[in-house]
Length: 344
Image (tube, rainbow, N blue to C red; front, side, top):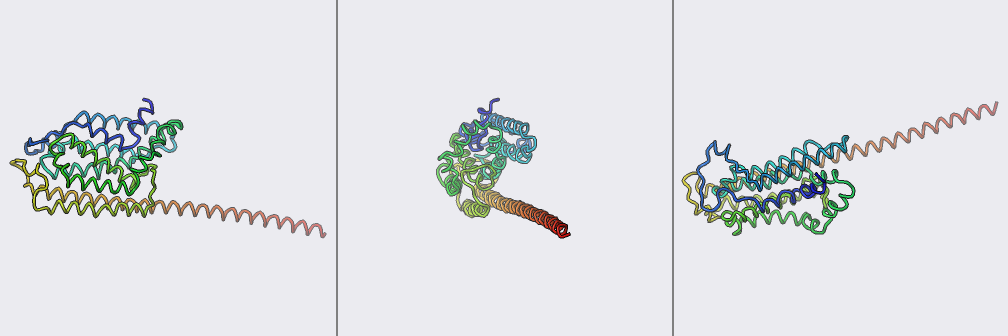
């Protein structure tokens, strides 16, 4: 499997995952079709395994593992950390849960489950993919020529610099959340499978761009200091809370699709809508808090490493001074002895 082919699959999570979503197959319950009430057996066995989603996820997982093994063989002393592999594969698994599990079968029937789907994509899958450091892995696996010809031109491109500029990625993330929930796009996504897939594309793509400068370890066109990362994430939490409260506190159904859907089971339309708002509120704010805590921990670790390096450098300088002083004392002693011998 040539590395050039792999580089088209795993150069960046945004390019390796979100593109497939535009071609993903229709969900099981689009339009006015109402599936039966969920049962335990349905929740266990009701996976769709849509090929246009499952196969790309599998190919990406295999490509990532292949790159990991290539790096581990070439750099046995510094292998890819297991935690990064677990994060990336976990992110792919989260996408599968969001789009292939029974959640997808009921996302156009229950707004609360639709919200679970979005939460999994934006607050679970995207951060895990970013923590998997696919760009670093690709840079380590590629040869010098491949890095210079394929990878670095993309990383240094003007388009990527614009998309990853922290203000742009922050506004894009917030804009996608508000724009999809308070525009005709949301109702259209409940009726049209292709629009629904576009919605998934927007959510996952915006989340990948947002989390990359916040918690990512991959090289980026823009580097944020730890205080700036904390501010970047913390400012996103209020807008998530306001959006969730706007959905939770609405006194009438926000989406005609759910209001007009006739089902003989489950919560009322308003109760379902309130549940969706609560899910966004709790899951989103907890994720932002966890991310800020992670940034603080990383900041403290970096400070400890910096202090340790500074202390080691200072100790080395002191040792060098002591060594010079010892040599000087030894030379002076020899000169003193030589002077005494000359006097005799």
